[in-house]
Length: 557
Image 1 (cartoon, helix red, strand yellow):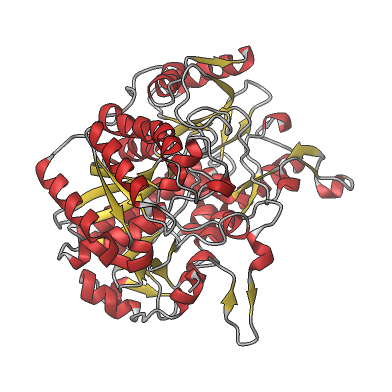
Image 2: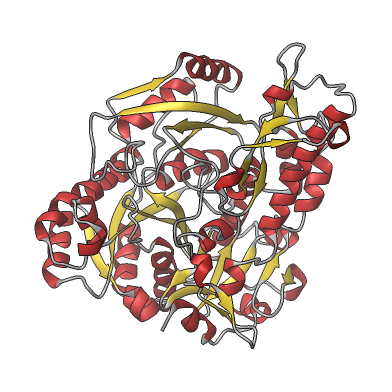
């Protein structure tokens, strides 16, 4: 059965009753969106603030490949398995972006018998959060252009405008545009472009805010451009924009709850990209789940060099969250791919390539245990083509570097297939109580922060930037000395070259641009040719998605 067929056949329970049964959250604190999805009000979250916090587990992965590794599927399957063992466990995921859903992925709500449902709703419009974020961002963009058109009393330099418009779709034709054509009635002509919504600073702010007040304050700090007079930063507050933006987001900030196929609660809220943003679900959802469960299983996007590093250095640093352990997802076919095997031959047994590709997994383990200071367990996401010899080799190689690896069959068997992983994880958490470490100190200069990540996490030999970029880095470092850094690079490699697989060393990381996100509270450093607006592939998933005559969606997977 396809993922969507499995999801549509699920025996879902009404979410209001399930929230009461599983979480002790009653209807007065729930905002239903139909029968099977709801938001928990901020008042409902405040009501459980006195509860003891559960244990936070991070799911991350080895470097991604075009074959897919199944991080979300593992997160959901592990959550179901932990619940089956009697541990009150809540899964925390990001909301899928329409861009990847209609692009490469075709959906991002798990897979097989480890999914969150209603799958179609979650993958498409859901509760409207992303539409609200898109509207809030584009309102600010419109107010910038409108202010300049009507006299520009703030003396905004049109060439310095720092924000583009956004749309939640992969559309390469919108990366660079000229707006305001057609005469003075249409504003003023200028070069601009679009980013994808999940790259918006509004999305980052949304996922880091903990209250309406915090949200409004952060939105007001967004830098929209700089003054012609003295190059001073012009903010959303200067444009009197933060109030209306907050009005558009006031409902969206409440976390969404849905259920797994096994009727366990999952929070699905927020979704910044992990290569061009920090790649984690909202702080509000994570903190609420910790007050409601014994364990919270959450994921961070892409490989651990991006997701796990940013989870710790940005999300945990800015929120005070403390993860207890890490589950590192790997697949036999991904290991072979990093060992030089082409996509068409990944189903063929190849122990030699697997051993070569294991260097990628080994580096991620080292980064997690040594540089982030966390306990780690490897989950081998099982595929039917995996051979016993290959699986045994992965387990042996992992044992040789001091980490336990287990096969997990959650895709095929649901929570039952991840029970061994759940037992090992609960034992690891009981046995090892570690405190996470940051890769760099908050007081370090921005350039030192970038170099430290590049050297420690990516094993780069050199870091370089053009003189103008380096000058910009020095200026931002002086103005925002304590901000963490989000390095935006390809997810496919430890380097900034997506074709450099395995565990490359001696490469050079080139920083091509840098931007301060004053509202979110971190700096984005773009490495190499990283786009903030993806494009569609040659055969996008959109070509396979349709609706039958009875209104049933087909083709999501």
